[in-house]
Amino acid sequence: MIRQIVILFLLTLIPTLELRYSIPHGFVVYYDSLGPAAIVLVCVLANIALAPLVWIFVHYVMDLFLRVGWIDRLYRRVLGRSSEKLGPYLDKWGTMGLALFIGVPLPGSGVYSGALGAYVLGFNFRQYFMASVLGVLIAGTAVTIVTISGATAFDFMLKH
Image (cartoon, rainbow, N blue to C red; front, side, top):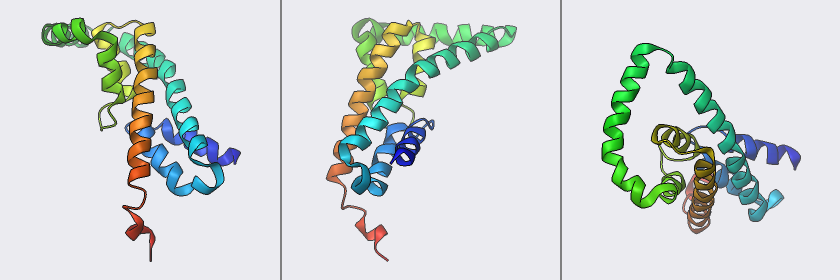
């Protein structure tokens, strides 16, 4: 049982997969041994725990990259253009907009890209973490609903 929990936890930490993979995997492989509530709880808590780690990593790496002159100039130019376009949306949606971005369980969204976006858009850690928790709860709910409702949709793959 501990091994299964660790596997689900680690699967949730994989960039681009996160809850989109770990919850369905848990339902297919560990449903009988862990049960649906434990699967969702482990995956959601792992994804929430990931948020501060990614925040620290993004800030550390970005600070290193921005010490290179041409990267810093390029970053500032792109940031300036993005800020002009995104400014009105940030003013209107703010942390909730970031939470929705993190919570949409599609490729390119999630805690990893949310941290990068929060860094570029000037969010502080508190705003990012609140958005991450809310976004992970949204994504966990959506993925769980899709997984439960489509549980028999892939039975043809499991039958030999």
